[in-house]
Amino acid sequence: MSTSRSLNKVTLIGNLTRNPVLKTTSSGATVCTFGVATNTTWKDADGNLQERAEFHNIVSWNKLAEICAQILAMGMLVYVEGELRTRVWDDESGVRRYRTEVKIDDMKLLDSKDKQGIGIEGAKKAAEDRNNGNNKKSEDKDQEKVEDKDEEKVEEKEEKNEDKKDKKDKESNEKEEKEESKNEDENEIEKEADDLF
Image (cartoon, rainbow, N blue to C red; front, side, top):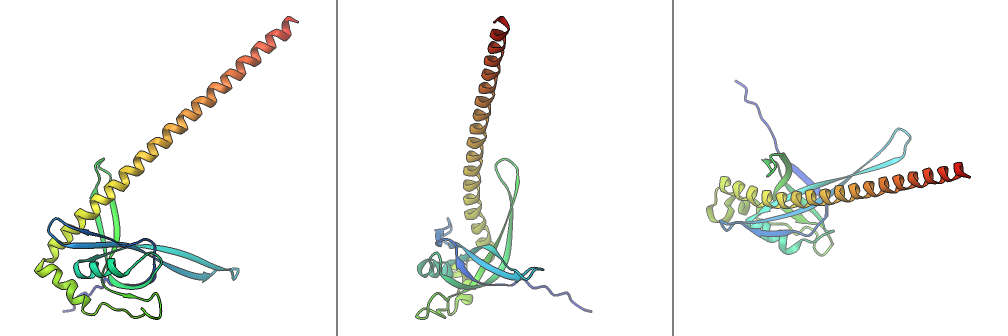
């Protein structure tokens, strides 16, 4: 009897798009988040070189999170290895949200010759140990709480900005309509004056 096999593994080499952010959960676990950009190049039908950038959300936990926060900075070239995680939640307005992240268990800094190959020896083992025995379920729950809260804040800010923009556009349209109405009234008055003379 054959058994089905599956694989969820991600390997990326790219530059950090923002500085790492280190946070501590209520249970004492540490989580570090940062972004990595990768570029893909190809030639189109006319032989012209094309390029596309992809942006990835990276998440690390506990010992590896602390190391990432200490040695990484925006612009650095890094190698990361882990697996895809997709979180699903409903925001305050009831809209379903999705976020795909790369949860890493290995990282190497490739930024310069003197730092090239700085690996995280034992990082995989440390990632598995997770804060002196914290289990995987607890880790995932803490991760979701941290990221969900951040996402809600960002989305709330974006919604407020959209409301301000809509209000500004509405005021601008009303102003234009008033100006057009005023011009029409002036044209009518001028026409009546011409008829009188």
